[in-house]
Amino acid sequence: MTYLDLEKPILALAPMHGFTNSEFRLKCRKFGADLVYSEMVAAEGIIRRVPAVMDQIAFTKEERPVILQIFGSNPDSMAEAAKIIENEYAPDGIDINFGCPVQKAAKQGFGAVLLYDTKKAIDIIKAVKSILKNTPLSIKIRLNDSIDDTISFIKMAEKAGVSMVAIHGRTLTQKYRGEADYNKLHAIKQHFPDLLILGSGDIKTKEDVKNKLGNLDGLLIGRAAKIHPKIFQELKK
Image 1: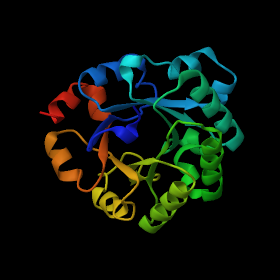
Image 2 (image 1 turned 120 degrees about the vertical axis):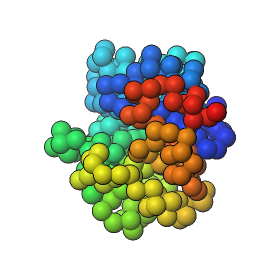
Image 3 (image 1 turned 180 degrees about the vertical axis):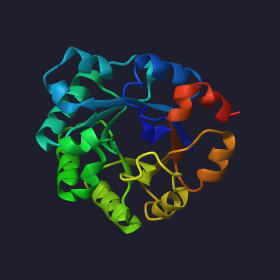
Image 4 (image 1 turned 90 degrees about the vertical axis):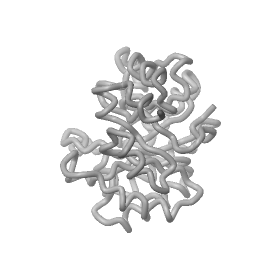
């Protein structure tokens, strides 16, 4: 099964750096998460087969469906890492991180800063997509400063072969301040009836799901799951 086969709405464990390891992913799956993401994993580390990095992408069959998320700024390296992952691990999906807002990511040219370097971001998507044989490709992004720019980027990503987009409802400069803007996420989804769009940010209760899901295909739960993994069970009651 891949995430393409899941019933909607999808309630997924969001990728969280340093936290969504195999043990935690399994716990969330047991509590009802429909889909789990790995933490973001360095493409260069995968290519060099750094032991700690390879541990980050290892998973058990009980975690499926599982998406392994990679990050980097070099299209060739990202493609090579994706090839290793597909051939040796066969996850249910590979995701590219275009959402990390931290300063270190910006300095190294990966994460959300790539949303402002459209050519390189799309080159990365195309390079990864070209190397994959059977594994669906998704991306995780943030809102751009302009909703039109976000829509334009997703259109290019869809044309390049992306099957799903998770959107954090804040911009790069907001980081985690303020509230996630689900009105903009709903407006974006209207442009993509055939593309899976998941919303991310501030999902903590059943009321949040009811009020924020709207026309989206699903939601990511991150910080709330970190505090309380049973949230998936509670959201489905």
